[in-house]
Length: 202
Image 1 (cartoon, rainbow, N blue to C red):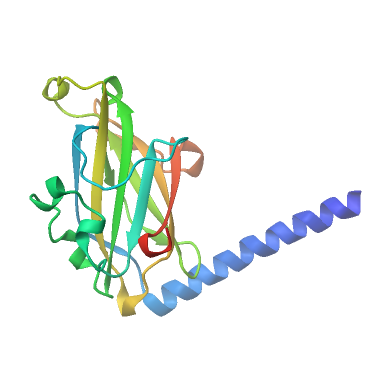
Image 2 (cartoon, rainbow, N blue to C red):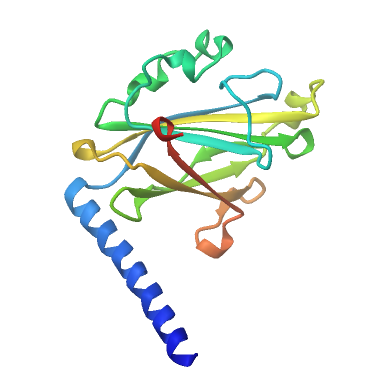
């Protein structure tokens, strides 16, 4: 039994070492991931911007786009296409990729979700993208007749030589507006972790 535990530990260390090596190789080959642009919109849940629905057991959904979809209307509702989202997915052009996600929450927990710090490679096609959660500066703005809100976020990232990730972990940190600091620089301080894959693989 002791030998089996040692073998399990050795296997885990080997996998961790392999992931580290792949991440180092990806950084050497493709350079770093650089955040370009991003925006978030907090809105009532019934004002839908992304087609489809949340999973039955989750208040999060998200995807990566390394290429534009054949038709953006497969992703966005008419409401979104009439506004700022109409051309955003076209930014996924080989040297850039797009992250789109939504978080659903009760009105009393209203918060914006935005990219924070610098994304990093964690494997050959895997990335870690820090996300900052912060309450609105003026909560009264969201005194709308809606019990449930959704934050829709879209960011564009630049990558060298077309090396877009196919999977990413979104580690959510909490922003303390009183001190202006972001908690969660260490993994154990992360308040939530979400995982996303490519829209094409959904």
